[in-house]
Image 1 (tube, rainbow, N blue to C red):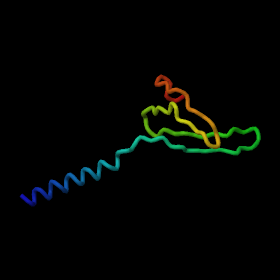
Image 2 (tube, one colour):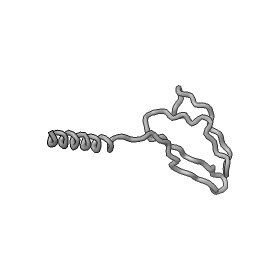
Image 3 (cartoon, rainbow, N blue to C red):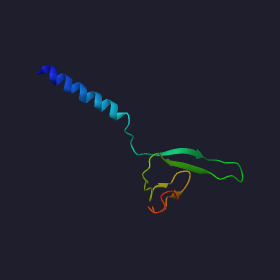
Image 4 (cartoon, rainbow, N blue to C red):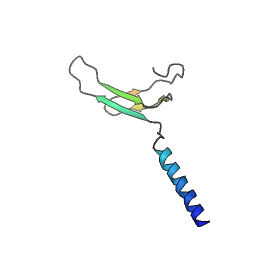
Length: 80
């Protein structure tokens, strides 16, 4: 019985280990920040969604250094 339980536990741990490497948390990444640009060039912040799921950023805002509030989210235009 003890041998069977140890094998079962090892199998469960192995499956957990193997599947955990394929899971990815949904996240939004601030991938580029360009500030204090040369004259005529814009300052910008690039935000990347690293998943296939549209991410609602409505109401997110910056208030220090730049002032910007993200517009309402439109699921019909998730890339806007």
